[in-house]
Length: 241
Image 1 (cartoon, one colour):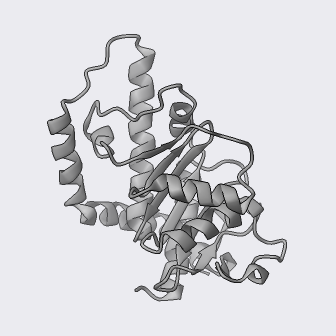
Image 2 (cartoon, one colour; image 1 turned 90 degrees about the vertical axis):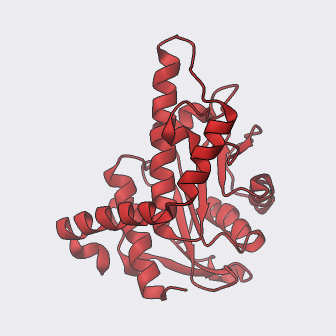
């Protein structure tokens, strides 16, 4: 497992990159990354701090089994409810990114929010996304976090109905690229819908093969993150502080 200092830097970078790409929402949304093997000790971004300003040292270490570790007015209650429960119930998920990006959220607001495999990006998610159809308001209760964790089932991606997108992973770079690609795929699908023409949906066997091919090139995802990280650090090295 990577050192806490390395995890802090990568998580802060992923937050800033999300702002740079316009995927953040005001001073809301949350990213977390485990620093323990069981996933119960994890870092969270501080409450109501703009993603573009977060430094590695700003991230707050909390413990899923210790409510006292977050009752400091520095962590959003929805972050604790969602991330705390998923880290508790899915120790295989070391990184959780939750955003309300425009196109993924648009898709989540449709009666049929399925990310259909119409091209290479969307085929990455064929039969690999869970869907929530029961938005019930702000997710600030532990029971809601438990519900979302259970909805993930065996997946690591959850399109949250009328809400946004949650991406889980074992690695920050992989999670970042996954979030980026999910939003890009959603954008393409929304644009395709807007033409009013019939979608040319890939055959199941083609979509499945493409999804499997994506799973074989995790190094591509890590390279994408590392390249974006290098650009960001060159522009503003304060993220490393």
